[in-house]
Structure formats: C-alpha cells, structure tokens
Image 1 (tube, rainbow, N blue to C red):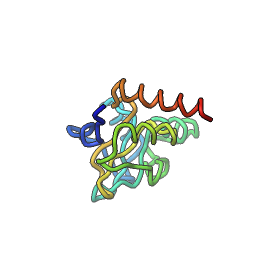
Image 2: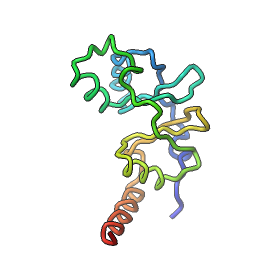
Image 3: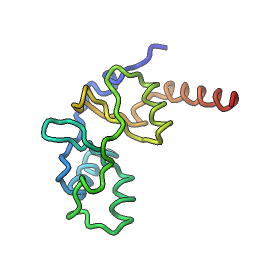
Image 4: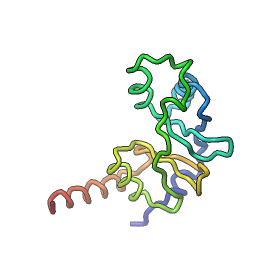
Length: 141
C-alpha cells in the first residue's frame, strides 16, 4: 500500500488559527462556522503555541462556568500540543492519535503551522490497517 504523507492530506488546507488573546466565544463561533473541532493557537509568526478543541470548550469553559466572551484562549487552551512534521505518514498520525488520546494533531514545519489533521481525514483503509495492527498487538500481549 502506498502510504499518504501529511502533505498529501493537508495540501489544500487553510487551517483556522487565532492568537492566544482571542476569546473563547470567538473561537467557538469560528468552529461552528467552519464546522471544525479545533482551533490552532499561534503567535504573531504563525508558530504553534497551543490548541483549543471542542473538548476544551466543554471541560474548561462550560463545566467550570466561565464566561466565553471574557475568557481568552490562553487561559483554557492546551499549551505546547504534540505536533508532527509534513513527512510523517497517515499511519504514524493515527498511531499518535490513538496512543495520545487525541482527535486532532497539528502539522508543523519547524515551529510554523502548515495544517491540522483529525481522525476524519483518514481513509477507511488506513483506519482498518491501524485496527488490524492494534488487534495483533493485543493478541501478542
């Protein structure tokens, strides 16, 4: 099987990025508008500093009774998220997501954001390969 690399998956992507001083409300509005599950948080040079997800909105904002209009991403984002380079394969991304319990992984070139992948970006064949590998390791263990 010819494995896809991150550049193949994100080639036409325009990832949604905000700076850490933006409000949670603004981030959630963008997530709803673009129908996405995560916002990449960057500095003024588009260097990754964090990620804000729907899970963060629920657990760190709503569940804690915070005001989304007056809470900044800096206060509730996951700082310094795990990311991967553009040369990594789809299978490596799926393994990283499974092992880390992530739904989204930023793709960076050095520190600069170039995209983001989520579990939905992967083909059935790629997911089936991961499932087969996981089943094999479970039988061995």
